[in-house]
Amino acid sequence: MKLGVIHASRAAVDVVAEAYQRAEPTWEITHLLDDGVMRMLQSRDWPRAHARLDALARDLRRTYGVEAILLPCSALP
Image 1 (tube, rainbow, N blue to C red):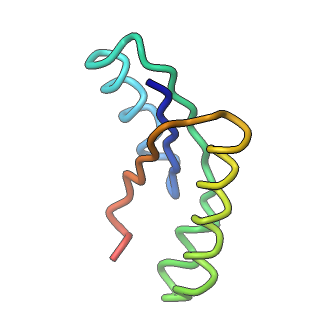
Image 2: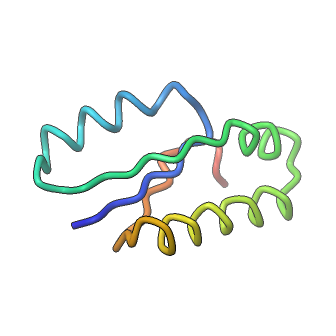
């Protein structure tokens, strides 16, 4: 399984990476961090945040061939 993870905060990167490494050690996981998305979410700039998350998801699929994408962000509505 190839999993892509989009992070809007540095705080979750290591936590998520370690959890998946323990739970699914054979998975190939690619993490992308764009902390600018968090600022967009905090300012409720939904159109720009959505567009950026969509672009990151497309990059994960195109560049890394991921089969699934996780958005572990509590700021997402």
